[in-house]
Length: 361
Image 1: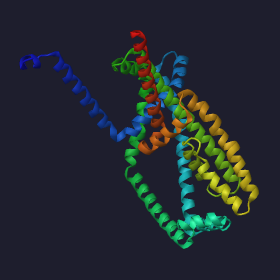
Image 2 (image 1 turned 60 degrees about the vertical axis):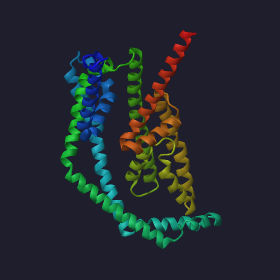
Image 3 (image 1 turned 45 degrees about the vertical axis):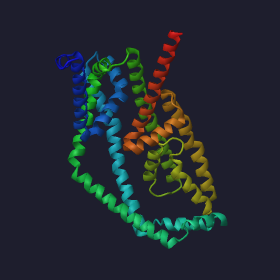
Image 4 (image 1 turned 180 degrees about the vertical axis):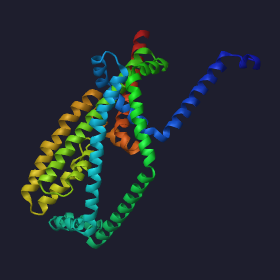
């Protein structure tokens, strides 16, 4: 092929158009990055609340704008306002805990000393080998950690104050995008599926899998986290542990990690009760943690997450932890979605190969 034929060939035009398509797509993603979190959660909210929007749309005779506005109002009332109230209360609890640590009222070294004093000799020697029985050194480390933590908190508070405008803009971008995705999401979804260069049946399966995993992961994990956090906080309040709301939120956050989450908080407290002579409190907290808090994870999570996503528990755990390590808090949704799409794509590939082999045979 000579140069004249090359420059006028359809292949060159197709390659140039494909390069242009990739370039403008990457540029579009680049300009969205400053509000990536807002865009992501706007899309997630639209996917999760789409059934509510569809129900309102049927009731109000296809008045799409009114149904989308009503759905958005429900989102604000059911999600945004409770989270704002919880965040305000959490800040107060965190400040109170920090003051108790600074004043010495809450002394983690003293708690550690009480635990170490009743440990068997071999375990005491093991801790000594790692330098964990030098309480003066431990006190110094904790003091330094508190100082670093207070400095980090102050920096974050200052950063939030400096970036308040960005937070407000991001919040309204999220709600604005959620409104239009609710109202026009069906048409947009059809356009995207039509543009994806895959077989129609593959496009349908992957789209259905993506939506199912988003809804199951968000609704399931958030419901499990809220339930375990509330149950753990109630137990801490009953046993007179200060900062019960703060620990409830921490347990709820850790509950995003399947199987191991809330136990990272209530189990050490139960062990402290046992070794310091509060036997019935320790036994009661362990029984409550295993039979009540643990039951939520063992029953609700497989029903709400594993059943819909058709993913084994170990894959949900690994993908959740990996997703949060890479993407931060957003990773508890992104990680399982990537894992589910990985399984779905390879399943389609294996099925296609089997069908091709069968047709050849």
